[in-house]
Image (cartoon, rainbow, N blue to C red):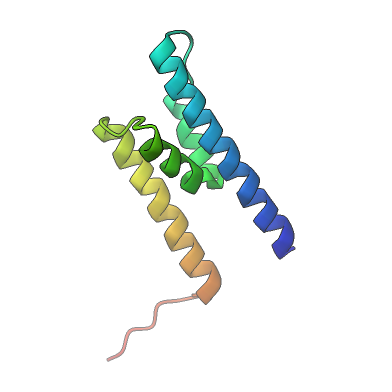
Length: 96
C-alpha cells in the first residue's frame, strides 16, 4: 500500500509541475490558459510539491497574493494532515 501511495504522489506532483509549466508557457505565448481552480485542485490532490517547485522555477503566479495565500493554505492542510496521520492523534489531551 505504501508503494502505491508513493507512486501516486510522484505522479500527481509530476503532473502538477508540468501543468504549471504549461500554463506559464501559455501565459508567455498567449492563448488559452489553465484555470486557477485547476491549478489549486492539482495542488490539493497532493501535487503541492511539484506545483511549488514549478512556481518558483518558472516564476509563475508568485506575484499573485491571493493565489499564493490559497496555495499556502493547501500546503498547511497537507502538513497538518500528514502529522495527524502519522502521529495518529485521536484527541487532544490537556495537562492540568
